[in-house]
Image (cartoon, rainbow, N blue to C red):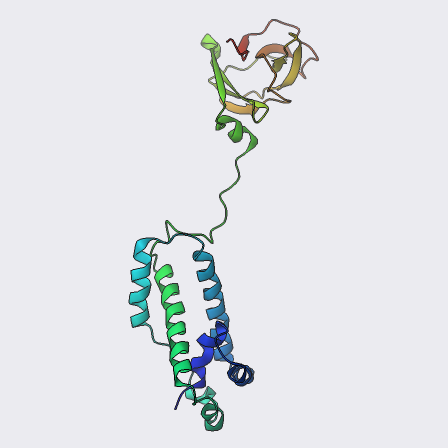
Amino acid sequence: MTDIHQLSGAYALDAVDDDERALFEQHLTECEDCRVEVGGLRETAGLLALMAEAAPPPALRDSVLTGIAQVRPLPPPTSHRPDARRVAAIEGAPSRRRTSTWWTSLLVAAALALVAGVGLSVWRPWAPDEPALSAAERVLQAADAEKVAVDLGEAGRATVVRSRSEDRAVIVTEDMVPAPDGMVYELWFQTPEDDMVPAGLMPPAPDQTMMLDGPAAEATAVGITVEPEGGSPEPTSDPIALFDLSDDA
């Protein structure tokens, strides 16, 4: 006698005919175990479909095939089985039963292989995307990044990185001494017309990575001046550092 519970795998994969589907769906209304099993198999099938879009590690296939031989689906407890008349209604298709059992074993074995860690560390197409780069990181890692470093002596060291493709610039400081009391470091973009355009105030930190305010693709230089606290609309002192970004630098 063939057990109707063995249809769970074929039903989860839509591999049953209309009569079997009607009979099994009626069975599902009475069997919580099969409802849980079908839900799990559908979830696993969906996961495997996602995995099929990526190239699996070579060892995964062998592990899955090995797992198939070791996993056997077991029916729910006898108390939940349907009566003999309903089972007899589907006994005319033995090959379908074998297909159901094979699909169930395949899905469960594949899941076991993955949970066991086979290739999991190198092949995770369902994993969330890597965090997006910040605006500063995109500039620093840009293929066209231009770097200009200036040694400020005892005041520290600073490097300006400009990406024309990103149209932004970043300043990276090392061991930079703070501005005098009541004063602040202000950044400037020098335009092709030699105007100085405010590009932000630097926080009082010796080591920092800061994005400059405003477009940078056309800038010919970046300057740092010492300004009254709160900054100035135009420089009130000569730059303590000037980073030359001109094409002939």
